[in-house]
Length: 104
Image (cartoon, rainbow, N blue to C red; front, side, top):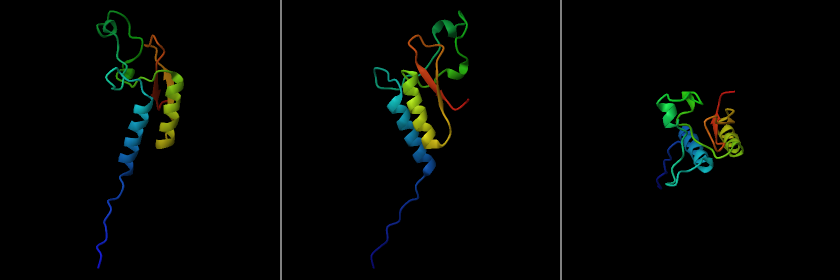
């Protein structure tokens, strides 16, 4: 009698997390070493020489090159997880980069 193969159940939350990471990697700005660029305050902001342009909530957020690209990523993430995402421009940016949030 042939043996039946046993399949592991698919971990849906892990699959969604992996797909979400793939979406972020696809759209995010990359450093010259290929890593995802993240938003950090300037040295002057960190040393309190000037006022912070953004609150601390944006520190470490993924940078998207333009607001249009961030909107595309937000649409894909919203379709994947079923929770609305929106793109917004960063006040700290001199070149006009954007971030994604789930807050409205």
